[in-house]
Length: 246
Image 1: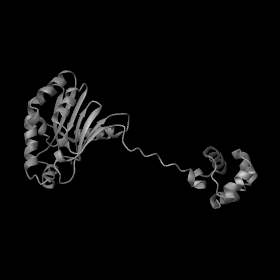
Image 2: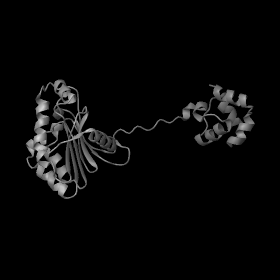
Image 3: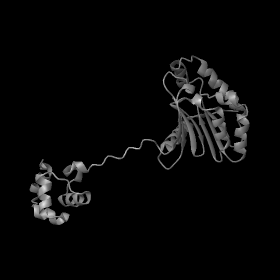
């Protein structure tokens, strides 16, 4: 099959096989095969030829387009769980207890943490005392987004009451240096439990309670990865959230 695109570009520019061969560093027979037989030169040769012709190399030789190699699994993915309920609460508390710089929690309620680990507030106080910044963002029980989530999950007013209960759990931490609690009215696409460069992400599925949705454990591997996406999302919600008054 002839390379009609290459032929047209050469004709319009007044290029002969010999002229293009000279600038590309090949013999004229090679150029003839490019045109008449549709042969594709090596990438470096094609780039020299295309530059001389002032044409896009991929327009002349589409076969040189290289799709980015697909990566089956992100290097930041530590583990993937079918349901949040498959991960014991100790995995959350062990991660929180290992914090050295930062703890960020973005949820609507997540009262399962206090219910299963009554020392949670003490743990957060200890981390803050050691220099950690602790930020807790809870759902605003009166917000439209929380009410809608209750209807979607067929939980009724339960989610609203759990948001209020969560606030009661965290209220003793108000005023503790290094700890701040806010409420947000955003649509919660996922719950985030970040500790330094690790995070547990619980994405939400329409009509499914959070404990029945998947959860993945991420560890930051570099700039611009999955971890940073969720960290930036938390920051955006935090900036819009309202501080809880003492």
